[in-house]
Length: 163
Image (cartoon, rainbow, N blue to C red; front, top):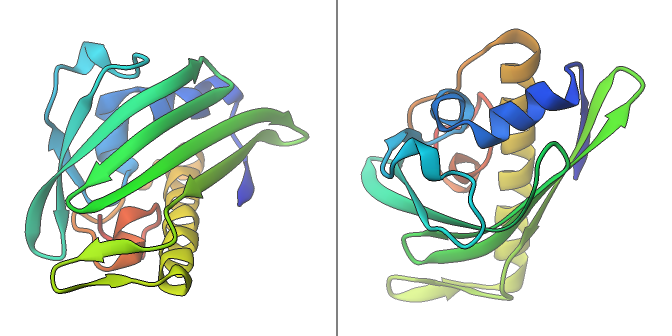
C-alpha cells in the first residue's frame, strides 16, 4: 500500500527515523522506551511505550535493514502480535512516494484463540492505511495523531486510530 506525500524525501525519512517525531505521529505510541540515539540501528532492539485500547504495552521494533532516505525494514512485536514492516521511499512528482508493506503470519495468537488469515489480512491492511494517513498528515500539515490505539487501526497510522 502506498501514497504520495507532499514533502521532500529527507523530511519523510526524518519522520520515520526520528524518535521524537515518531511519538508525535505514530498512532498508539505514547513515549520512547529506549535511548533515542539507537533508532534506527540495524539489529538493535528499540522499545516504544504504547497503549492498545486502554492497555499499556511495549512495542519492540528491531530494524533489520536501514538505507537512509530510501528503506526501513523492521521486525515488530506488540504484545502477542509479531509482524514485519517495510517502509520504502522514492521521489515523486509532488514530493515522496511512500510504500508500506506489512507481512504477518497466516494466524496471530490471542488470549483464548487466534485470528485467522482473513482477520490478519484486514489487520495488516488497516494498520498500513492508518500509518500512511498519519504520516502524511504529519509531514504535510504537522497534524498529530491520537494518543491511544483502538483495534487494528490502532497499530497503524492515521488520525482515526489511536495506537
